[in-house]
Length: 201
Image (cartoon, rainbow, N blue to C red; front, side):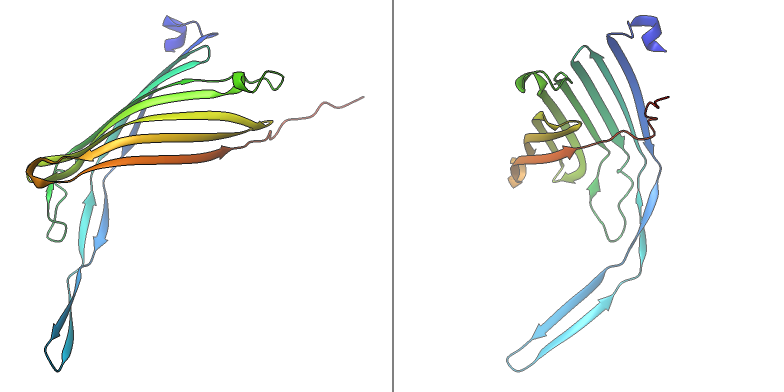
């Protein structure tokens, strides 16, 4: 309905979304294996722990996108309540996690008669992920930049290549900071279903 109120639906499009994941639980069982050795013998022992449950917390996310012409801008934000999720087996300083991401795309023309370059789609984005882990009073966060390219292959089939370069962690308190490089490939294909072909009289 927002399109009718504030936008021209022929050239502009605005969307809002929400996702909610309710709580769920996992069964956890911890088994410990011991080895005792001396100069003559090696003894093996196993201690079986009691099965426990671990609660996966509630998660809620919101998203919005705005497009006009061949351009699309989108953003997402997600929260998850990890602070009360530790138990006797999974001990740790868990904190509530959050993630925000933003991106933009310039889509290519959908016309097979046009040149290959004009049919390419370009994408760029940024994300910041505050994870649920906290080590030595420092939250383990990750942030990075993304870029991608979509290209036509044949009829309704297209390919995608994506690049991501990010950082995770910190060097404070003798912790570790990682540099992350991810490369992804995907293939999209489709066909028309339930389309009644024209009948000749």
